[in-house]
Length: 215
Image (cartoon, rainbow, N blue to C red; front, side, top):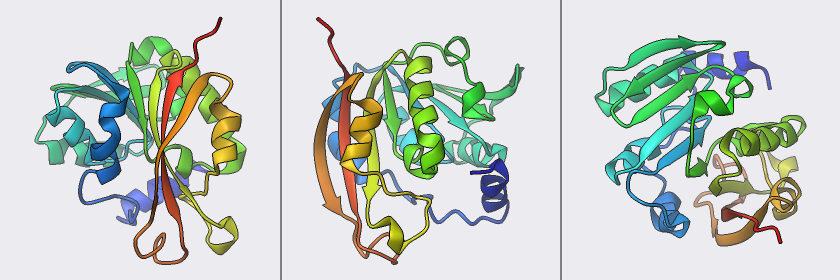
């Protein structure tokens, strides 16, 4: 997946993957993470998702990572925030009340830059990446977050029926990436109304990942 793919889609407003409201599966299952108000949540490849506004409204702090600066500018505009912008090594950081977003390649984000987070909300990152990048991404995510708990949303469908993104992520693939580090619990599996992009039948699966206890 080349960065130019996402730059071009944002530049031409080809963002059918951007939802007009907070994801109902987030709203329904967020409490499973048992976080405290004020905890910090990482949203990788966040785009300008309204899920960030919902998390802020619930009293959480949010940190995101996004390749497209246009998406981040639109996110802050929609949140009604005037960002403070700083240059940090290979990344640029937009900061506002309760929210920080790093602009650039997520693989340039280090634990030191990210800071401590209590949870990860991955709705649009794993499904956005082709198979060849997903192992590297999941390993990197564990490193920079110290294997923080996750609420993971992913689609499952016949990949032959449609080109991604979003890509199909099977239960087996979730296990291959995460079972050695997390206890996995599938919280829900719901049919996508009207099919995925209107092209094929699909399900959206919700996973709770808690760091496995060794010993």
